[in-house]
Image (tube, rainbow, N blue to C red):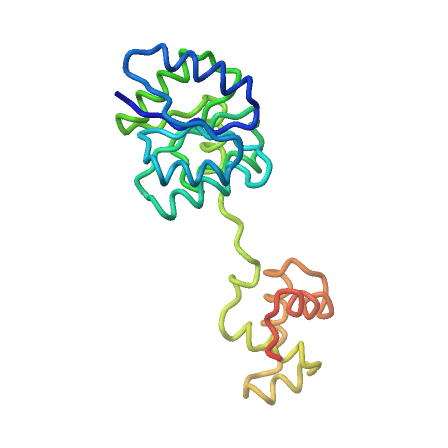
Length: 211
């Protein structure tokens, strides 16, 4: 028998889904919660095989509840069941430790299948969610622009932030004035700024300047 905890702040949703699941020979809803805080308490108390978690709830939302549960019980298998497909919900929920992600527009039979599959160790994701994840994986991660600077270029940028001229930087680092100009040009290009002032502003905005 697969034991289930269902957390959702809409009573009618809980009643409807729980009734269907309880009609299945291999599934038993052993507890219900109407907010994230209660879901955490019941999850740790009953240790159900599967937790059905709504995302938007008062007191504590499903993402925070998932984080708390997984932190204290890493083996928990949590299925998000929600109406939301936006990036601000999907990624944080999966990063929090949710195993599967289903929509409330899914048929009760599909949710039951997801429960069985998740119980067996699979991760069930709505096609739209899978598409979002694949798109994110294909998208190259954007690094901070200053990470592309060499150590010498970073030194030059720091001296620029101190207000030093190219000649003063040349004297300070014992390098040719022409070399300083090349470094400054490279810095502007890598930071995607048009002049020294913008480069210095970038350095301060990103806390690169030692205080």
